[in-house]
Length: 141
Length: 390
Ligand SMILES: Cc1ncc(COP(=O)(O)O)c(C=O)c1O
Image (cartoon, rainbow over all chains, first blue to last red; front, side, top):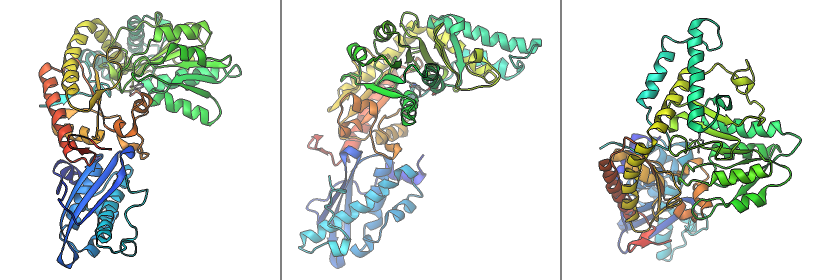
C-alpha cells in the first residue's frame, strides 16, 4: 500500500529524537486519533534551522511524513521551511494512499508549530509570520 | 525467518482441499445442472460436499446452502430473514462486536428504515450477557444475530445459551461462525441456532466459498434470483471446485481438530506468555473463552499499523484492528466495545496461528514483537521515563 520511499523512511527514519534545550518545539495531533508528531528545532544564524528532530506516535505514513519533513527543513531558513507544504511532503515520498493524506498535513503543521514556538520564545508574535500560533485546539494535544 | 501469523485473515489452502478442487478446475468442468454424465460428476461433487459439511456442523444435508463467501452467508441470513418476516417486525438484536459483514449490513438496513437494531454491549472480555439478550427481545423482534467467535479478540460467546433464549421467545437466531468453524467443535443443533455462517478460506479452504446452515422449517427470502439453484435460495451456477475444496478442508480440520488445536495452542501459548511480559501490554478478549489460535494484545504508547509494518520487515505477517485506514481515525469498534480508551485501542496487534506454525516460529515472533514495541516506544512522544505519558 505504501511506496518504497515511504517504507524507506519508515524503516530508517531520519532525525529521530528530541533536541535538548531546543529553540522551538511543536507537537500536533491527538492520541485519540492515533497520531501525534513532535518536532524540535535548533535555529542558528540567519534564521537557519541547523538541527531538527522528531518523535512520532502513529501509523507508517505518520512516521514517514515526519521523517521526510525533517529532511526537507534541515539546513533551510525559517522562511523556506514555512514554504514546505503538505503537497511537498507527499511528493517527496512519491505519493501517499488517499486515506493517509492527513498525515502529510500533520507533518506540515508540526513544522509550523515548532517555528511558531521559536518566535513565541523570542517574544515575537508568530501569527503574522506562521499564520497561527501553533497552539490551536485542532493541532495541540 | 518467515512466519505467517494471520490465519484469522485467511489461511493457507490445505493440500486435501487443492486435491479435491483440481478435477473440477480441469477435466470435470461440467455444469452440475446439465444432464449428461460429465455434469453428473460435478453434481455428485456438490452433493457429497454438502453431506460432508452437514456432517461437520451437526446438520442434515438439506440444511446446507452454498454461497460465495462468509459475508454473503451473513447477508443472506440477515436480509433473507427480515424479508421473509416483513410485516411481522423489523427489530434486530445483535452485539456491539460483530464483523462488518453483519454490522454494515444492519446499518444499511437501518438507514433505509428496513430494520431497527439493538446493539448489545459486551463486558471487558467481550462477552454478551444472556440477561441482556433476554431483556432486549421485544414482541416485534424478527432476528437475533450474535457471532460465535470474534475475529479480533477471539472471544467465544455462550451461543447455546443465547440461542435457547431466542428460541424460547420464538425469534430466529443467526450466528456468524466464520472464525469458529474448523477451529472449535460446532454442532448447529446443540447450539440452538437457526442459521450459521461459515467461510472456506478461514479453515484451509479456498477464498470465495461459503455456506449457510439453515435449520429445517426456518423461512428465508433469497438475495439472488435466477435459475433456482440451492433450492431457490441462491441462484447461480455452483462454484463446484470451491465447494469441493471447502468440504475437503472442513472435513480435514474437523477430523484432525484435537491434534491441530494442540499445535496451535502451543505456538499461541508461547506468544501469549512472551508478549504478556512486555510492560504496559495487555491481552484483549477473554483469558480462557477464546479461539485457540488468536493472540490479541494492546501495547500502550504504540500505534498498531506501525507495529504491523515493522513486523513485516522482520518477515512476520500480522494484523492490527487499529489501522486508521477508514480515514475517520476511529480505532476498532471491538476494542472500544470492551472498554479500552481510544489512545490504547490504537495500539492493537492480532497474531493468529495455524497448525503449520512451530514453537520456534512462536519464539521468533515474541522477540520480534518485543523489539518492535521497544523501538516504536523509543520514537513515541507518548512514552516517557519508561511509561506511557498521555
Ligand atoms: C467473523 C467474520 N465474519 C465474516 C467474515 C467474512 O468472510 P468472507 O471473507 O468469506 O467474506 C470474516 C472474515 O473476514 C470474519 O472474520
